[in-house]
Image (cartoon, rainbow, N blue to C red; front, side, top):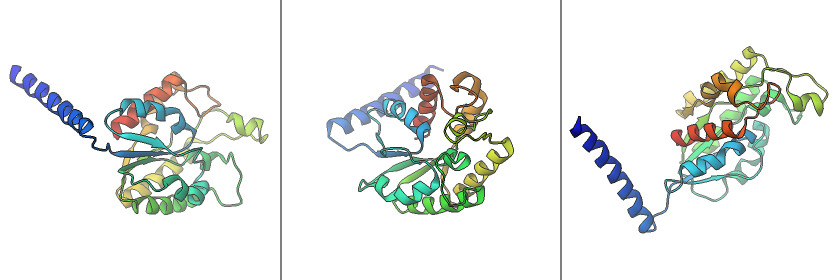
Amino acid sequence: MKSLLFKITLSFLCSFMVLADDQASGKELPKVLIMGDSISIGYTPHVIENLKGVAEVKRHKGNAGPTIRGVARIEEWLGKEKWDLIHFNWGLWDMYGWEYHKEDRSPEAYGKRLESLVGRLKKTGAKLIWATTTPACPANEKTMERRFKQNVRISPELERKYLDVALAVMKKHGVEVNDLHAFIKPRWNKYAIADNNVHFTKLGSKKLGEQVAKAI
């Protein structure tokens, strides 16, 4: 038991010393890009905090919105940086249609655009991690109700279609999956702002940020 404890302690100290040496020598930290909607806006500061001294974490400006917007602006968001890892998601906007477009937003069309986006991300040479889309809210979504005067509630069956389509694309391309949906779904009542809101409390965003940092 003492031997095992010694080995664990030694391993930790060695890792710390390597990190300290890298920082002292001015060695660049791995560059991480987070790409996503307002859910990622909420958790990114916590990812940065959790990976301080381990990775240089950045997020593109604005909201990645639906896959339609992603296809149009992916080059702008990638910029000229050489990314070592990209953690990304699209999904809620495609489900809800907060911004209407003439293009089809069905699960099938979503999958095709996601396929195109993954193809472009692979060309960066970065390691890719897909964040599964966090849950649709159980009640009529408030923005659709107030702004667009529409009662929109995503059924569990429709939500599952979007999730499965995305997972199929990731499996096809060998992309690692960070299952944020599975993590936060059982904790919805604890961390969701309200049943008509897809967003999370500050503590909920913190917990999501911890999960993202672990995956990275």
